[in-house]
Image (cartoon, rainbow over all chains, first blue to last red; front, side, top):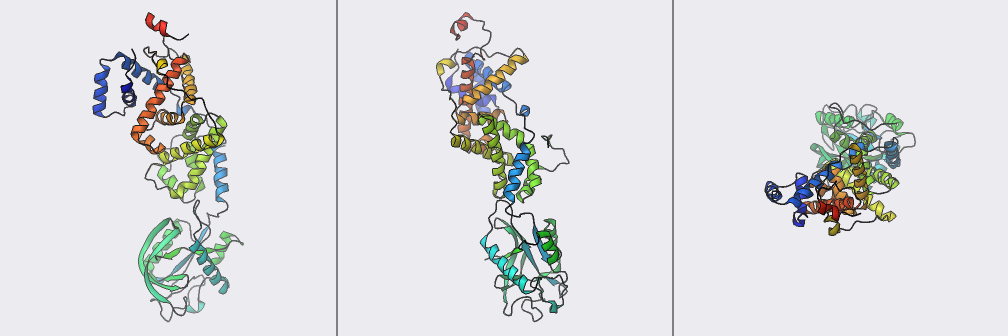
Length: 246
Length: 209
């Protein structure tokens, strides 16, 4: 007896346990009176039983190594592993601090966004101007490793980290590793804008939270010198991590 | 040389953790994923591609594509589903590029008409022989049927998952699997691997020599 072609798909699904209860009932009812379909189902089950087994698959010893060689070669042009943060150690006012993060490279698969490049030029230029330290104004009295000093309000006279004519603004402080990954870490804080450089004034606990977050991601170094050391002498420290929402 | 890992132990990083780390560029985490999935991926590519070297190349391509595509992987499908999809695509691309053709079975109903009650393999040897014949038959299936059937039987995926991997409707999954089985069964009967010791004279007469 031949099986019933119109039942082929149902029988196949039935053998996989993928029928709806209604379909299963229909199949069982049909099977009770159709020898051909019973035989067909039996053969389907036999095929399933004898089917090759994935667990028996042999994997060449060097397969994973071959894959990882390609993976690491892919990552090499982008020095994705080193990201460096230099942070202020001691804010001037009791509760405010600001941070600029420097990023070298990106994550695999990401394209280096143009804005980061522009910021890189700003950061690099600023660094050169200050002879190796980032926009730091020693006369503000911050610790030697400080990156940027800001007073307790943007635009205060104590603040000489930013330009002479800062524009005060409020903007969400976001930590962006790549354009695709955005994390709104710390809410909305005051920000002064000087060209491409954004200076945020944060309460101490917010600053601490940010530093902790960046440390967990292993993004921090304690000084420009250490950062350079980690990055390598010829590496260009680039990019500002903190962006302002447009 | 690293050996294929055993199934993860409770203390091991979860797949989710590994995927998250790999997304951030952690190559070591990605390597753990490679070790966990290499067997499954190779099982798939070896049957989607007839040639063993093609299979290995496609498998490596699939993992590399996964590494490069991870930042864009949203995780709304499972990682394995996504990886299998990449794998299937890599195989299809490679087959097209190298213009590998395999003889395709045509669904000849007259062959399939030879119906005898399915035999149970009497011994391990028979079972192994049947398994080997199934491998042969798989190679001759049209790509689409083969892919669906392999994902079902080898990777033990639910129809829903297969639909996600192959980016097709569930109805299409069902029909492709069914057709694949029909063709496979026909091939096995034609090659003599599926005919039982027959009881009835009628069946005896019908059997191909």
